[in-house]
Length: 506
Image 1 (cartoon, rainbow, N blue to C red):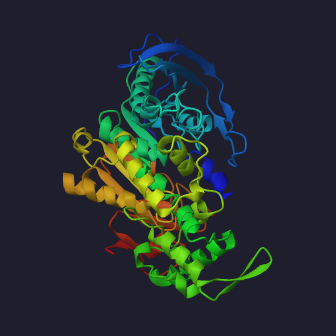
Image 2 (image 1 turned 90 degrees about the horizontal axis):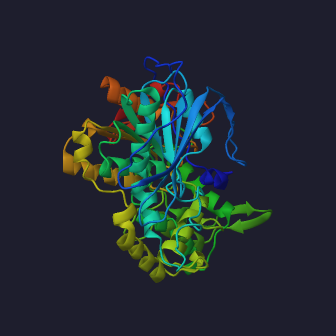
Image 3 (image 1 turned 45 degrees about the vertical axis):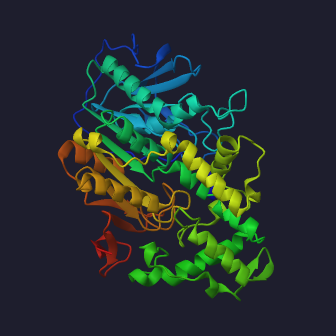
């Protein structure tokens, strides 16, 4: 289940805030006229009214379908960039009635630039005109095999540029133009909504296209792509070099021991480490412990503890892995596919390169090569948000502290760099950490219920969020996520109630 969830396009939050609905006129037709997209040519435009109803997720996704979707106009605009030879599809869905006057750009996950139809249906139900794009690359979130290399085996930097940035602006231009044509007026407010790759896209929009969106929900943003994507192979490198590959149950034993040791530091036994910086657990403390793995008794050795220590410490030049996070994501028998394929296609240009056999030296050469070649293309970590701030834009970011794929420390570091450059960063950019939350959703901690609603309130009502309401996946506990750098502190009462916690300095 964990690996299946990793393959999902990150689920985007749905806002329940609504303004006065704008109904389509009786004469309104699902048709689009001439469109102009600077830097691109419009190849074709199709439009068709859809009845709504139920919209399914792709086969194999363990998510209930989206039901009671109202009728909508579905528009697909196909673009190409002269001299590139690409074919980019931008999809725009517009509710036939009940439009709130809002436009939404919808982000993707992994190597997929856009959201699925079910994502779009969710937003149509909420009255958004919503757009997404494939960027001219296949909608495979785990592998870029179909587009990363050209016919000569060289990196296709044009399609990588589409994926990283260019197609984001094209989508905003097309989406707003189609919305304007259909409803007879431009959107009053425009929002970006996404997690993981979608979060990176949100920050790229703010950095490179500061006038495209009024508000951005950029969750667990995959900024620092050129570094963390390689860092996710560190656990494979350590186990290879130490000649000691740990089983899943051994990895689980270390994770459990760390949580056992650090869970109650905050005064509450909830299997959540509220502030991972306070956890000083030493994996050597587990040496000599006997555990059962697949019916066999295993004794944790000093070598096992050393492997885990090195994994938790992380590689030089990057952040370590948090002690409450699930090591199975990156240290399991199968390398994290998005990271493996990045190295195979974009660094080695060899799909058969075995990332599990890298030495420490080869790993560091790869880490540096990724940064040198691709930070300027896909890093999305430029702290200069002055143009976005000047435009009046607002950003909300939340990040789970148990995120085993994109370390929350990268988001904190970026926020600190933005603050040093712009001064009072909370005026326009607010970060919230979610203790115990996994990547975009899941984990034992509470996940924000509706972060986009906080963005909408901030943009339209001037209500800057002080906390983000959150709850656990099983619905048993609620929390209010604290505005960074504050952390939650238990003050007594029902530990499952948000009212039993307050936000204080660490």
